[in-house]
Image (tube, rainbow, N blue to C red; front, side, top):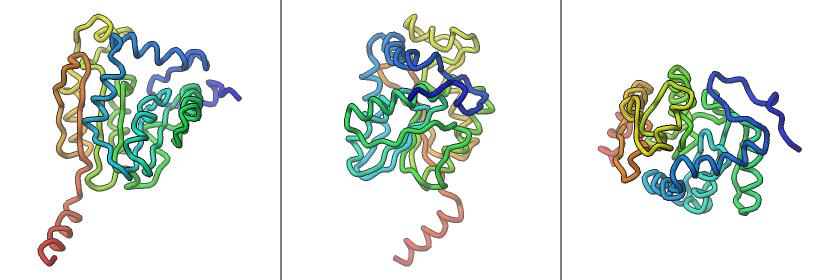
Length: 234
């Protein structure tokens, strides 16, 4: 049964629709914009995210599920979940997961209203999604991601290295082989700190047209003090 665009939740972010066929074309589009390096870039993201056996992972803006499916073998008996605002994307993700034999929970949901309880995940990932969101929605999304991360949990972001406000500019830097516009690392790192993340760092890689940013869910001062006292008495 095909989902209809009308079934998509309302959001201020840009959502990729175009029917189920448009969703199937998305993987090809990513391959083209990365000059065929999509697999290597994805592997670098996973390496930096360091999913571990038993981890519970959430991929926000999971698209057709490629990253979530690649992460699943890394966590073994752990759980992998994926959310996306596009019903068409989620349908393709479910089809790919079933074909791969991966037990992954894909569902239609928004970054600004993540349908999981507080402190649910060890790791949250985001790949080529944040450039679709206006800044106020990014800020709301970061607060939601911090909420669903366990204390000390990790957030790993990968996106285009440059942020453009033009409609085509979101993807042209990668297609043309160089970065133009505002640095995504410079833009996102202060926003992540404002949302309460700690250890926020942009990571340089050989993939110059893509930004990799890693952050950690800051442990509250009260919780940190309690842990320090416990360690002292331990």
